[in-house]
Amino acid sequence: MVNHRCAVLGKPIAHSLSPVLHNAAYRSLGLNDWFYDKHEVGEEELDSFLKGLDPSWAGLSLTMPLKKTIQPYGVPSNLWAKELRIANTAVFDWERATYDDPSWPNGKPGIRLYNTDVVGIQLAFDNANRELGAHHGPDRKHNALIIGNGNTATSAAAACAMMQEIGHVTVAARHPGKNPGLGDVLGRFITTHHPYDEIPLSDTEAVLAAAGDATYVINTIPGHAADDVADTLAAAPAGTAPFTGLLLDVVYDPRPTKLMAVWRSRGGRAIGGEEMLLYQALVQVLLMTGIWDDDPPSDADRRLQDTTTEDDHLEIAMRRALEEAL
Image 1 (cartoon, rainbow, N blue to C red):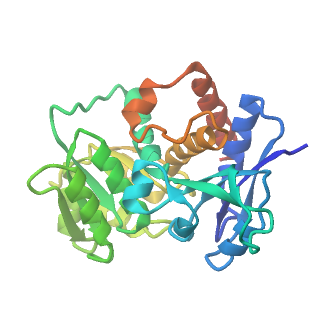
Image 2 (cartoon, rainbow, N blue to C red):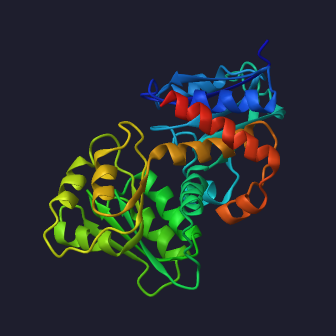
């Protein structure tokens, strides 16, 4: 019998692997009365979906296009949900439900909003560096390159801001200037004289130079849209600096992406979006099930320091389920 329900919402949603991860976590934790599903919900349908929930619902994951649409319904409850006004996680508190609004027939729960994408990116990089034995301490500042300038790029910028070894970030944007929040995040949280540059993605020479200088690269352009970037890197003229940094491509289908394949062929290391997906989901599980309270770690260092044996087993179970699904 299912007494606790969670789900991922978005449009489109059929491709989502979140149910695989969350249900594997519930099995690992022995939560036999928990179940996680997916529902195709667009911006126009979110209101009616939320108002139709009952106290069996514990939480929701939000993907595009709902990460901003959810904002009026809840209270941002961790650093980056507050700073970015972008949330991919909603946790329900039915003990604080109110019943004075008839449009919420089952009561309106307290809704806490979190952004786990930022810590998901951090943990993906931390795990890759740990496996490869790489260490980039804060004693030397490194460069990062973010490809794209949408909402995911804003979370990527926040992750760079929290990684103490990163001192300079370049954003290669398809539409420069379209997302002023990027500059705000980087200007406030990365303290160098020139913390943030935005270059046109069409500027091949500038993109190649930034890629060659970067210790970390994050591609946030979905689908096959980054294939043109891969072609640009593959056609780099002789004498171009090798790509020695670590690339995180948020895309996990196809696997590896064309960009990852080209990056590796030029000497760099690359990890797919399944790594970010795994870690942001791990934090979601800890929040939705109440294992973490409403003040979870906002940075990767604290998360790793606070890891317990139970969390280790949980991560292993989720990773195994994800690998099987892929």
